[in-house]
Image (cartoon, rainbow, N blue to C red):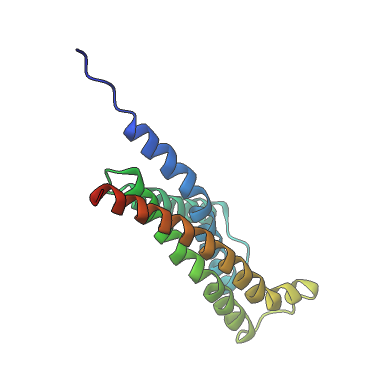
Length: 149
């Protein structure tokens, strides 16, 4: 009898990519927004590429690192999503404080968005944390069920 091929690495890889998309996007936004807040300029293509590589490398690599089960991967990915989501309002407040304490030109109507960004990012963070927490809860339940049938 031939051994059955295992599709687990493929399933883990696809799941890691799908989970890395929102986590990496949030982390990439945070890095680029911090760059904007510190320099006052739009990042160059090189900075965009570097921050993209770092953000999605972390978002894709950390959940896959030494995980065997899909539930472990989802648990770690959702935990990372919770962490980067909680950093979202902190980053926007940090950028606002840096911008206020610097000698930069007034942004006009764009400046109003700078002042509203902490509220918008807080609302987004609440939604993201709730979704990632739900995913984490379901993944840990699955892990417990597998270890304690």
